[in-house]
Length: 299
Image (cartoon, rainbow, N blue to C red; front, side):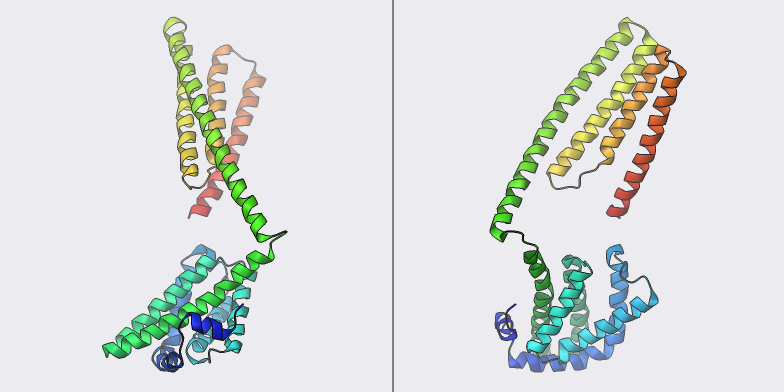
């Protein structure tokens, strides 16, 4: 990590900005209790960040640490000691596996809350602009140091070399994309086969036993519907959407249902029906569990 002087230069942080921070502290810190409450309410709106505050003790500890950081933001000398404190905070975030996106979002919340306080308290336009410029510099500087811990953690996980691993990852991503394209082509071919099967069942319904042919055609329609869903899922996945396992389980369910339809006209022995129904029940349970988990992740 660079020294604090190097960081300050990158953000054009001047001695005048250090003085402005003290003025900002006089304006914002009296509202630190309310800011801490608002910040906590913001965090618990997201299930991911709310999971870190399951007890009242954790809630109060979060408010205390937030107010300490807020006090440092305005009153600390931006020296190497302050830099080390920020680095420790960043490492704690990495240790508890808090995603960097939530750190950035939380800092945005703080920035906007402080900006509103300054805008309400400082009426002089020139002074307000100078103070807000310093505020943005300070928050950006703090955020840069905090999130640098995530980059350091990433480099610490390198096995051979970062350049080599980047090339391997790039090649793997291209290969995976190619395999997904092959999968989509296969799904298109299978959809064509299912259309042919549906046509065959319709012909059989007209030329043979009508009731038997209609039941088979209904089963084939279900299969065609599922093939369309699979194609939609794969197209969405290629465009960056999540891969949905439940679609494949739905296809298996439809296949079992079609098998039961057909078996009912072939006068299969009772054990065959029992096995088909047990298989259908097991697939139904698996589908319920997978669908429930995917819905929780999306919520």
